[in-house]
Image 1 (tube, rainbow, N blue to C red):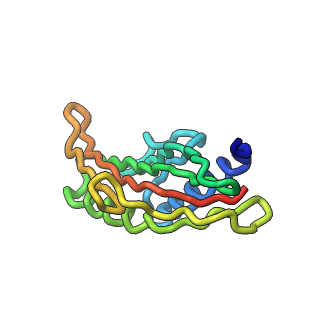
Image 2: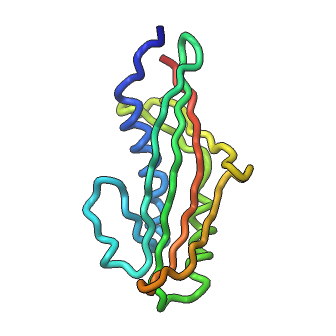
Length: 151
């Protein structure tokens, strides 16, 4: 029988991902983080961090593999430079690197490793173009991560 998944893993992993991608605000991009007040309406260009998972798979008597998908939605008002959104795709894609996951005491839980996506690329970019009737241009940057966790 598999040992139980430790309850602390989920908030530690989520905190590491949100903290890592929230650094995009340093370049002036507003980043909406999960469970924070929504202020996207106050910004002409913004990004929204969406995290699917983690999902845990028992791998051997002493460990689990955890898997998450990080999906960052980017939106810009039509009035912005036509190249602003593709430039943001590149800026956001550069942030998709391995992420250190720390416990509350600052010790290392593990490393979120970037995994190849469905098309074989580490990061998948989708430009949805101009959204009809909104005047906004949207796209996403998606990456899949795994982490090996000892029980």
